[in-house]
Length: 309
Image 1: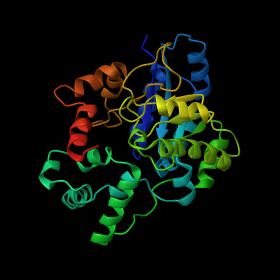
Image 2 (image 1 turned 120 degrees about the horizontal axis):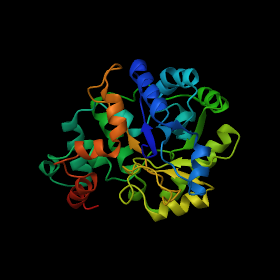
Image 3 (image 1 turned 180 degrees about the vertical axis):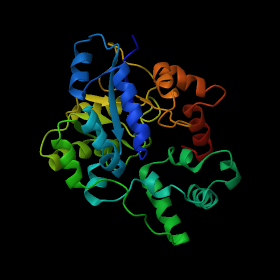
Image 4 (image 1 turned 60 degrees about the vertical axis):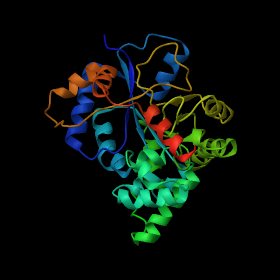
C-alpha cells in the first residue's frame, strides 16, 4: 500500500488535467479531510494509503475550475489564503512580479541592496526575493512599477463572497496562509508573529468561525520557518500546520509541520499515464528531478552571503 501523503496545489487552469489527477488520487488513495487527517496524526494511527489535498493562495482558478470538480467527485480539500489579499482584492507580491523584466528587477535590487550588479547574475530574481523581508520586497516592486509605468496588475484571486461560499460547502476547509506571504524566517520577531496571528484572527472574523489550520508561505523547514513560527502558531490557536517538506506522512510527525509535496505536471496531458506513475513514485519522483541540482537551502545561503542577509 502506498505511503500516505499531503499534496499541495496552487493555480489550476487545466480542467481536464486536474480532473484526471483527482480520478487517479481516488483510485489509489483514501481521500481524507483536514479534520480526519488531524485525528489520525493525533492518535498516531496508520496513515498508509491516505491522501489530503491542499491548495495555497486562493487564486480564482480554484473557484472557477477546481471547486466544480470537487463537488462533482466529492473530494474534501484544504485551501489556505490571506485574509488581507482576499478582503482587499489585491495580489501577492509574486503574482505582481510575474513576467517582470529580470534585468530591470536586478538593477533595482542591486541599487536598493547596495551590491555589485553582476554578483546577482547566477540567480533568478524570485530566489533573491525569497531572501528579503517583505517590506523590502514590497518597496522593490513599487519602484519597478513606478520606473516602468506598468502599474499594478488586475486582481488574480478570489473575493470574500466566493470564499464564504467555499467555506459553507462542507468540502473546502479554509485555513490561514499569513497576511502578505513573506518568508517568515526573514522577518523580525514582531513581524513574524503579526503575519501569523493577524492572518488567523482576521480570517476567523471573515468566516465567522475559529481558524485551526495554517500553511507556511513557501514552507521549507529550517529556511522558511522554524521553532519560532511554530510557537507563534500554537499561541494563535492553530492545531495543525503544513510545510512543503518533501516527505510522506508518518505517525511521528509534528502536527505543526506536516509535510506536503507538490505534483509535477510538466509535460502531462489529461490522458497521460504518467499521472499515476508520478503519484505512485511520490517523493522518489521529486528526488529524481533534483539530481545534480543545488538545493533551495544552498541557493539561499549563496544569495544571503552576497546581500549580507
